[in-house]
Image (cartoon, rainbow, N blue to C red; front, side):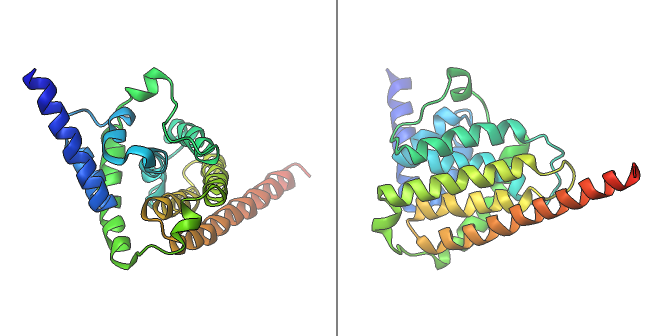
Amino acid sequence: MTAILERRKQRNALRRAGRRHVSDGFEAWLDSSDATTLGSLNDAFGEKILAAACLALMAPSALPIPSGGATHVLDVIAVVFAVQIVLARRTVWMPARWRAKELGAKSEKALRMLIRFIRWCERFSRRRMAHFMTGRAGEITIGAAISLFVVGAFVSPPFSGLDTLPALAVVLLALSLLLEDVAFAIVGFVVGVLGVGLTITFGVQAVHLVGGLFD
């Protein structure tokens, strides 16, 4: 009985932190005595779990450090969550093994580094066009954009660092949903389009270079 009450107390503390600030919610989740799993993330963010999960999953790719393709599994999971944003699901669907999947030491470190960036963003954020951000049109638009930029990060060449901008775009778009601030959505779109454009440009150049070797 004591364990159940303690668990309930901890869950309520996580939710209070998540309501105060997005950064507080992530920090409380990481510092919780429970494992940092996708399932436990729901305790901090409730119905905004999908946006929070996309942000957490793309954190390692959003840092300016070549991932070497090690984050591809996280990208696939993020796409599944982004599609659910488009479908306006209020509860997250995922296989049981995903729910129990721990974030991992590298992802935790990346997210802790990203929390400082989130705190900086919160200093300038306010609710802008919140009715759009919380409505169906906003969810469809942001969810579709997150899906596109996750794919952009996924197809970026390993060790090129080109996945950083699309992943950062996902972080900004997810933040726009969590903060209900359209300004971050606009910046996220710009960063994402730039990132995908660079990936396509370098991809075309690489194809031409390889093709020239056989002419």
